[in-house]
Amino acid sequence: MATDVNPTSIAERVVEAILAQKLAPGERLGEQALAENFAVSRTMVREALMQLQARGFVEVQSRRGWYVVEPSAEEARDAFSARRIVEAGILAESEGRPLQKAIRKLRDHIADEQRAIEGADAATRAFLLADFHVCLAEQMGHQLLVDVLRDLTARTTLAATLYQSRHEAGQSCAEHGAIVAALEAGDTARARQLMIEHIGNVERSLEVETTAGPDAPARLRATLAPVALPRARR
Amino acid sequence: MATDVNPTSIAERVVEAILAQKLAPGERLGEQALAENFAVSRTMVREALMQLQARGFVEVQSRRGWYVVEPSAEEARDAFSARRIVEAGILAESEGRPLQKAIRKLRDHIADEQRAIEGADAATRAFLLADFHVCLAEQMGHQLLVDVLRDLTARTTLAATLYQSRHEAGQSCAEHGAIVAALEAGDTARARQLMIEHIGNVERSLEVETTAGPDAPARLRATLAPVALPRARR
DNA sequence: CCTACATTGCTTGTATGCAAGAAAAGCGAT
DNA sequence: ATCGCTTTTCTTGCATACAAGCAATGTAGG
Image 1 (cartoon, protein in one colour):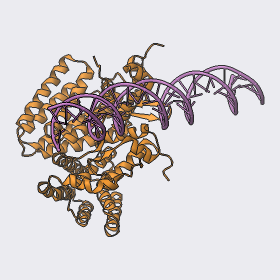
Image 2 (image 1 turned 180 degrees about the vertical axis):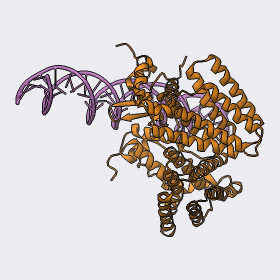
Image 3 (image 1 turned 60 degrees about the vertical axis):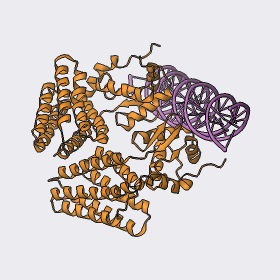
Image 4 (image 1 turned 135 degrees about the horizontal axis):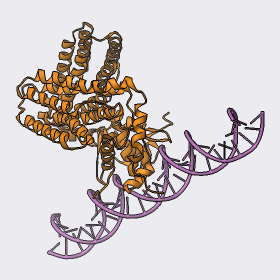
């Protein structure tokens, strides 16, 4: 099992839980509760939470507690906007490079996505669809932007769970395929344009819901909170 | 004075020291030494160091110590590459926006740069020249990219101190001016191109040195280490 | 019944103590 | 003198103890 547990591994687990919607936005993360959960002391939990704070996943209210962030509509827009800039830039800079290996890896990834869409749960699907973009940065050799995009895509995924995205996984997957196809054809300009549209589609799919119900977060939270984090019995 | 000292403020001070070349790449940061320096306990120092680790400024070797990172030539290239992508993207996306206020602020910033070039020390100059790029992202309303660029520019600045950049501050400042001028003229494509060239110029100014002497880091370290961090007498 | 206030409990913030481990120093043998 | 081994010292890793502050609950007064 997870015998060697360090702050970073705890942080990873929490991020996974957030992305898997086991931890809802706005949900409280008690240091003590987490410490008991992972069978470590508060020290390591605090370190993990601060890593997550630096990455923008949680925030702390002084002497009140740690909470999963609830991105405002504006913050969500900013995240999508940042993604458009970074990802379009990556594709633009890929002009005239050897892309064979990258394209093969991306095709493999898309195949994984398709399998997940057929069989896996919603959380796994969402993770893989976001990971495509991270994978793209990685294949293009931008290691620093990989880290940036990991957090950026996670943030947009968080926003999607918060604002009840109605986006179809199948459509995203198809759009990924189209981007890679354009890349393979050497048409980086088209790949770039497709990427911008793709991110726009994902963003739009939750913008319509934003106006519908402002209390969507609260409802979601109420639905998921009870099973979110199995506390130790008292 | 800095009466209220928290982990974040400590981290900021350390970053400033690194950027001001008071802490050289590869230099050791003892928890105890820092704790005494800031008159706090190791706990806060550790929190600060972990924040800096997450931002890529320091690294820890297990039970050995914390060290200011020494970016390899490849890592430095990656940082410049990431900056080109992000900053060119920001300018491209600024097409057809109201830019009056942003341009005014940027001009003010450039005026600060000029004053610093005439009067201030090298560290202040380097900081302001890097801050221009952060300021640009801020004025364009990309809050998330502000944080990204803050760390990215810091990393390139670190690389510049490590590889002995011979870049002229005056040239950078002039190039900043040209970028803003292009922006004011509504020629975002040109602004974007100028930005790419500008970052390329800064990068090239240290790439030539890379091939010259691989032991430059060691020499620099030896020069600066003795006065870097006043340790408590023993 | 409602409001103002004191008290209690629970949470984070910070410091300190102890253990594990790595490097350096001391030391003896060849 | 040098090599190999032991011991010592110094550093981080982690846990625990205590302090400070917020929030909720109970309570008395209007």
